[in-house]
Length: 176
Image (cartoon, rainbow, N blue to C red):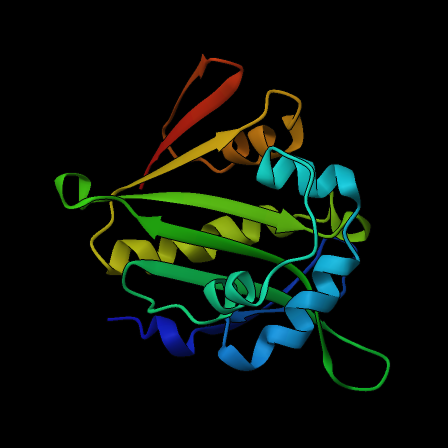
């Protein structure tokens, strides 16, 4: 069984830069806030479907203090110039209600400077690896129709996919 709380993997972006994909920790609050501040408003809109304000202390806790049972959250980091880690993206899965215990909703955010580097696909692969070990057999995602880049990630994943559009939102189902 995979210990999602201590998950850590090293990988490379398309341009050859090293990236670490790991479980988020409560100690990541400041780094998450810094990463959030570095995102364009358009990226935040694609992720949250609405304009965003400064995250509250409660939101930062929810983002960084997860149980890795009902919620799994991974961050993608590169080495900063000072040797510390810099968060450049992240992905989450949220196990759905008991009636749908084998399903989880997923979401992704990748800093603009790292979009197009294969990072979302890598995050999806790692989330799926953990989810399978937790008995999850299906991912559900919702996105705005304008988020063609994320839709392309899902299409290239190799996972069986169904999609439909309802009320201006694209619903995707990926079988694991």
